[in-house]
Length: 388
Image 1 (cartoon, one colour):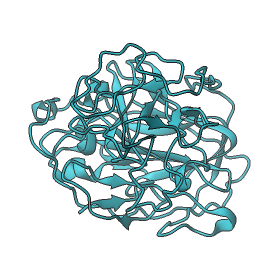
Image 2 (cartoon, rainbow, N blue to C red):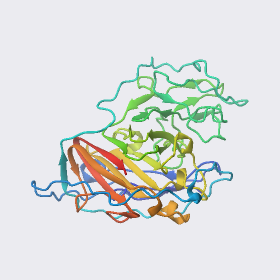
Image 3 (cartoon, rainbow, N blue to C red):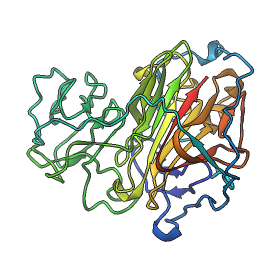
Image 4 (cartoon, helix red, strand yellow):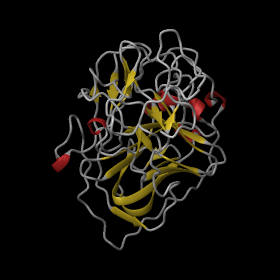
């Protein structure tokens, strides 16, 4: 049975999906506010009516401790067993946020670059990716103009945004991944349910002969997201944020890697994205790379058991909601939140609406709001997830 857990801190509720195969992972779904304040199904809307006095200034929380390297039990080791579906986490409570403003910016990109592809489905571009018998070949190579990113191309999935042991087969939908800051603009137009029929129908459709078709011919393969949130990594090691594939099998396999002392844009989707859902990222330990963007299993703090979960997406009200929380599965598996780095959301420019207290952070094992916190970005505001 597939469980669906809504995880945008202070923003979302939960839902339960339909059954799926053993190789298909837990669904993580985030639903944003509907127009006029009317909530979506099982959505808990954030309280944002309170405004702090105009004289209040946001002061970034100071770090008083050094990052504690994980113990030997937290080292990355490739999983050797099938995943076990975890227990869903409860939706966090809402808070009354004050408004915070900032005039500085440190996001890694000032503006999204448009795709320069032709819009036609390519023929493989000379790639040498795996193509199991009967499977449909992945149509792109590395560094393509469409900003499509191959996922584990030497495994059975052959580059598609699917689990390594899955294939794109005739008469099926085959999702693909996009570069950091971009989202897949192709999915099944008939998929109208968050869970159940159609919820895995992202990407391109392969007909009975294996010919790929583009459901929205006039749209690009990858479209720029909101480009208003990024990871700013102050550590001396890289950190990977692993986005879930949705619509798709919802595995956390799309990488955005912040290098040591560097930044990376996150794919924060607009409200026009599929059914108004938003993006979910499982953020691994320091020292991680894109290779750790896998489902994993409970004996290693990787992927579904990563220490942090970030969320982001635009609501129908035009505001963008971003969140951070500790991953309850990380602690449930016996790992300690005090053994990992700290994260704070920092307003970089424009008007950012923070929870009561004027901060949103998870540091030294405790979040500033129980179960995590959400920050609202209004207008052209930008913010960073600062890892320290």
